[in-house]
Amino acid sequence: MTAATPAMTIDQLKDAAKAIRRLIIKITTEAGSGHPSSSLSAVEVVTALYFGGFMRHSKANPRDPKRDRFILSKGHAVPVLYSALCHAGYYTFEEIMTLRKLGSPFEGHPNMKRLDTMEASTGSLGQGLSLGLGQALACRLDGLDAHTYVMMGDGEMGEGQVWEAIAAAAKYKTGNLTAIVDQNGYQQTGSTHQVLDLTPFAPKFEAFGWHTQTINGNSQEEVVAALTAARKITDRPTAIISQTKKGFGILPVLETTGDLNYHGKPLSKELAEKALALLA
Ligand SMILES: Cc1ncc(C[n+]2csc(CCOP(=O)(O)OP(=O)(O)O)c2C)c(N)n1
Ligand SMILES: [Mg+2]
Picture 1 (cartoon, rainbow, N blue to C red):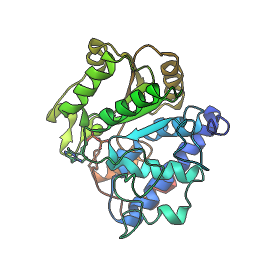
Picture 2 (spheres, rainbow, N blue to C red):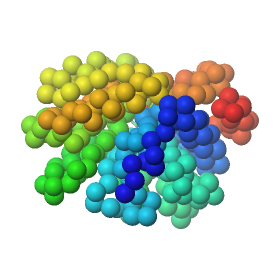
Picture 3 (cartoon, rainbow, N blue to C red):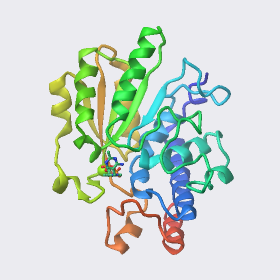
Picture 4 (cartoon, protein in one colour):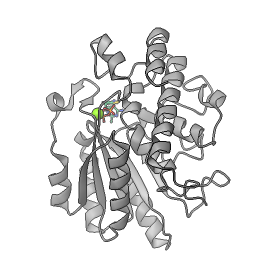
């Protein structure tokens, strides 16, 4: 069991984030489908979790009961997870380049039956926090010092099941559970403000009894500080409202398309080259 072998410095995390962004662009453009913009907003959080010394995980034994868990409830953003795991040496570049190809275990949404690094099969939005709560409670019952992190989208927060899990996690004082809301301002069909605006998120979590923090989730420094603070709270669940930009890292390229949501579509080869140049 390793504590992300060893924790990277902020500068190293920023380099890792850039490398992960490059992988996201490459694998989704190769696939010709997928959700690069949804993946890019989440990069700083996922990078910090896997490389900043927060997640204890083991390449030799990915299902080690003592591991910390990360559930990507917004499963369509799984290119960020495959790319981070590739950067960590779990998978080769060639392997993750099979994203979404027939027969590949690197499916368009996480499939825990195909990959032992996936903690839950997600993609049907709204379920990940319930699954994470179950895992956190099970770890506590088993006397394991393991932390469970769950990332949700801001559009996903409109799912009623999320709020059932928020209430239950508070009731059971689940101090080994951290929810991260990737508040990137958009969901599938438009801005979350237009579709269903549940902001501000923090007071709602607080009303249920959660510890909350609201941060700039594309600032590596703020993400590391928030995860550090969250780890110190052990008597109740914690939420990090991670305010991000969808497509962060390649925004100038998305601007040229006139579509800053750019939901569920890969970059063309030409746009991908421009994006990669920005991330050089
Ligand atoms: C239950 C359910 N309803 C609808 C969808 C279709 N869908 C896929 S992504 C998405 C938008 C999600 O928005 P958000 O949670 O904000 O994630 P983002 O892509 O912005 O990171 C929707 C509605 C789904 N996957 N699951
Ligand atoms: Mg969103």
